[in-house]
Image (tube, rainbow, N blue to C red; front, side, top):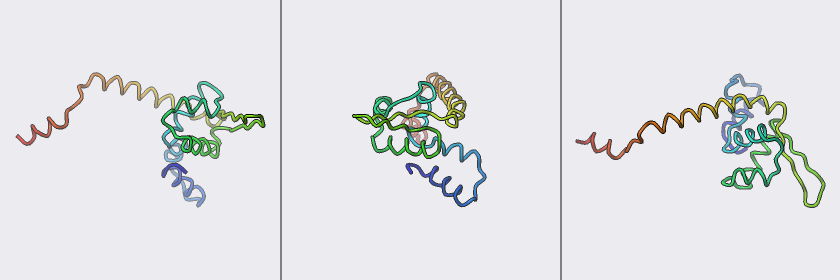
Length: 135
């Protein structure tokens, strides 16, 4: 597992000691790239690994593979392997994964609005503030 939140939720679910719906929801797309993967699969449709890699050039192959596997384990995406040469693997969002899209859309909208707000606020220079406090 690539992140602590998902690992903790999985452990609680297996022990039957779980009741926090918010934490469960968060664990479904916690991880550096999962939210972006779900967004693109939900908006654009099927992607192959190489295409996802081009969308996420800073993601290592190992981390991208791990996060795709976790999304598949959580039944949010499907992985279809075609016995061709070279091997072709398609990733597609599931019906369950699609139910997270309204949440992802709201997060995108909130982030867009927040970025607009931050552009209107002059960035603070921490060093200047520290100097003023000492004076």
